[in-house]
Image 1 (cartoon, helix red, strand yellow):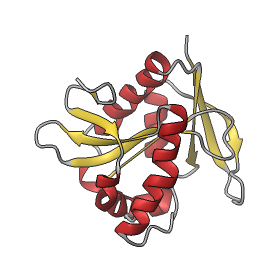
Image 2 (cartoon, one colour):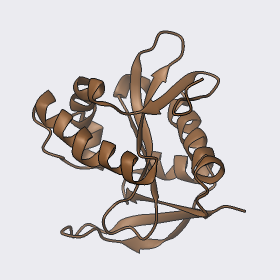
Image 3 (cartoon, one colour):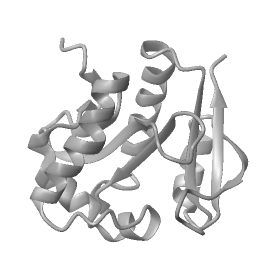
Image 4 (spheres, one colour):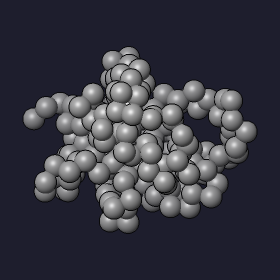
Length: 172
C-alpha cells in the first residue's frame, strides 16, 4: 500500500493533490466553511490549484504532512478534508477538518480526525497537537473533545480580531 495513503473502516485519506482542485473549490465555498473557517478567496478551480500548490503541497514537501482529502471507501467520493497544519499564529501543529454538508453528522469527521491524530503521533512523531475553532462552532468543539483534546484558552490569529478557542493534546 502507498505509504501516503491511510485508511480507516470506511475511509481513505490521501494527501491533497492538484487533481482535487474542483473539490477544494466546492468545499472552500460551502456555507459552513465560509461561516466557521473563513473566506480563502478561492473563486475558481485555478485559485484552488494555486492554493493547493502554495499552501498544501509546499507544506507536504517541507514537513512530510499536510492536508488530506477524505474519500469514502465504498465509492471513492470525496467528502472532506482533515489535516495537520503549520499555521501562522499557532505555536505548534494544528489539526483541522471540514466536510461537505451532505457528509456531516455521520461520524466521518471523527473517523478521519482520529486517523490523522494517530498519524501525527505515530508516523510523524509529533508530541503535541493544537486546534482552533470559532467560539460559536460547537460541532467542531465537540469533535475536538471527542478525539481527546482539551480547551487551553483563547487566541487570535495574525491580522484577525476574532477570539478563537485553542485546544491541545499531548502524546503520552
